[in-house]
Amino acid sequence: EEKAAAFRALHERPGAFVIPNPWDVGSARLLASLGFEALATTSLGLANMLGRPNSAVSLQEILDNCREIAAATPLPVNADLENCGGDAPEVAAKAIALAQAAGASGGSIEDFTGDRGNPIYDFTLAVERVQAAVEAARALKVPFLLTARAENLIVGYPDRLDDTIRRLQAYEAAGADVLYAPGLRDIDTIRTVCSAVTKPV
Image (tube, rainbow, N blue to C red; front, side, top):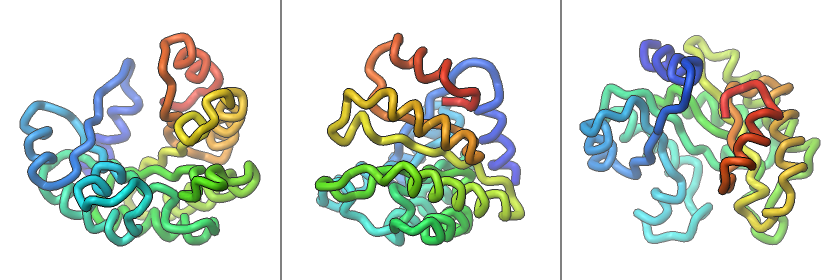
């Protein structure tokens, strides 16, 4: 509960904060010793550590890695849950409770399918998945900070900023606590996205 409250407070205070990506216990302890206030697991870092391509780790491996990192320091941890282990909204919802059980104070759900041939979930399904994840997070006894990610810009659609914003707005309306669009590469684009929503980005 203390970690969850501290993690939410970081997102509610003015300004930005830096949240680095440990990939194992050693990197988590090193980053904590440098004064960071929270940590975020990385599915890419985990895949690299295991010698696999990105999106080639299972949800169970992601959760096991999260459990180890969350136990390694007193800092709150955000779990990179990729697509939460499956396409169906109910599968995504289950991943949220599993992430909290693994020690996470928050976690993210992506609209990247994991399939490079068809990389982005249909808009309606993507929103339904976020809604299900939000409902699961709200049902937990300890608050869980849910980040909804719009992945267009890093999976081959750098020209889809309008769709990225539309998705972030829909994820906000669905109840996501934090919004994330990886691949924003200049300050004007960051301003455009931040001004289009009211939740932390």
